[in-house]
Structures are given as structure tokens and as C-alpha cells.
Image (cartoon, rainbow, N blue to C red; front, side, top):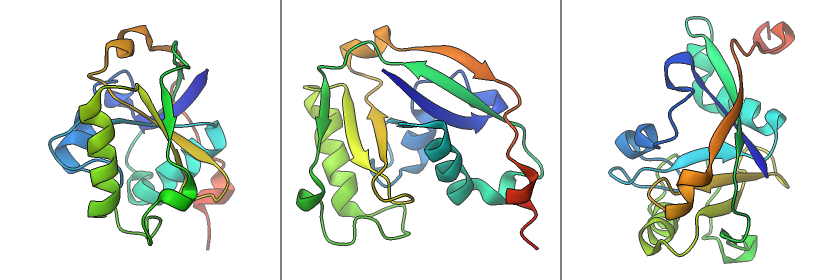
Length: 156
């Protein structure tokens, strides 16, 4: 299975999840590393734009195509089991962070499949960098730089 991640150039080869661990995110509290990836290049693009639009004029970004070697270690929370408001614009909902924390600390599964808050019907794949199967995950291609269509950036 392939997943995708867009990142600043200096972090594109880092699959440690330390950035998410330092800042926390929708699915992880500060202090717990998690690698956020998307099921398609298009979703990875939109996720990056939603969270980093302000950086685009000053930052070179890259796209990593990542191969996950273990599919049987994917867990998914059905959308009906997600807490009310899970997809609001806040990055730090305690309820979803607790779900991610439970996933990370259990070490039972390597990948957590979650619905995108940006594009309904699409999915992100969250990787536990401390899981044994993380060693089987690798970046198979990096597009450097990854350029967004200029029509997206010239909204005015």
C-alpha cells in the first residue's frame, strides 16, 4: 500500500513523527509521535494547504510516496464511533487525541485509518513510528520540489 505526505524539504525524509509529537495534532497529544499520511496525492495536497497555506511563499515543499509493508496491522474507527465535532477546525480535540493516544500506546496495530476532516469520504493513514512494523515502511520516491498549481495560490 502506498500513502503520501507533503512536507517542508528539510523534513521530507523524516518518518519519526517528531513534528506531530512536538506540537500535537487532531489525532495525537503533544509528547506522542505520529506520522500523518494520506491515501492520495490530492488529499495530501489539501491537508497541507489547510494547515500550511501561510508557508507556501517562503518554503519549498516535497512529496513523499511511502510504502507501508504491513496491511494486516490497520485499524479503523468507524465514523459513527467518532466523537461529536471530531472534524471541526481545531487541531487539538482532546477526544480524538485520546483515541490516537490509545492506538499509539497499545502497539497492537501499526496504521490507524481515519476520515479526513478536509475532504469527506477520503482517508488519512496515521503511522505509529514506535511499532515494530515501522521498520518495514520506507519512502520509495520523493518529488522535490512539489509544486502546487499556481491557480490554487492566486485566489485573488
